[in-house]
Image (cartoon, rainbow, N blue to C red; front, top):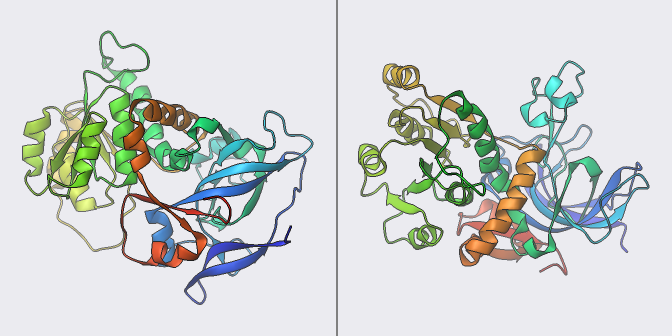
Length: 377
């Protein structure tokens, strides 16, 4: 086997996006796992890093290998690894803990709630990512995936965003009598409504998660009513509402009390307009990280009155912990069983690594594009 491999990287110093040669990594500790990377999803974060909005190479490196939505096959394991075998499918976590002893979250293995901000994120901040042929990492960051999920398992990481939101929602809403009567089999939200803002992969996966949890789910997005995404959304029991035909106030009239709003568009102006119509006792979840586009008008007095008088909560959800990865793997199996055509259709295309420039720098197309490595298509 060749001792070098290719990876897709950004070089901030020269503002280049290119293939780089890297040594094939080897096991360094008894708890290491070596993965052959099968697939890597291309997302908005990757595109923003390739536009040099952010992205930090590891110390001592002039480049950062990108990619954080991955699926790998176990190639080798260290002598101290248990519960993982060669040939297993795994999805690695993204975030690595900060080094500070006083950070209770990182010391407890919950680096997704790091107090210091000195975390590393594979493919994003100070750690090479997964858009390469092989990766070595500690077994504690691996999440086992059933082989039956192989066709869609690359969607696990983006789904964790919604799963983390749901985990927080159920915990936070214990502060009031919010549970639906006769809930069973994990379907807890059947008496509540959820509005998803945006019909990209994070929004559509979130809508599937909320629909599976029993919420009456609405997706509000800029596409016209007859867009193919509207049929996709209906296929898993949700409703599509076009921003071209419905104002935010008309959306509220259609939905009624909005119990959960899930922002997945990265547009702060539209997000705060949705927050304006959030219902009593509602939770608003933000997932987008908008660029610096300048100030937008916001009715701060109205928003503050609503948050206080309607007992509302606003929270953000980002790189997830193990509980959300496990929930995503479980629910992806639910989706594949209930809506196989819908969940498979989220993956627009699988492309060779040579197509990386078009996927990362060209005009966005489809829902989720995936890069596969030689022999893995």
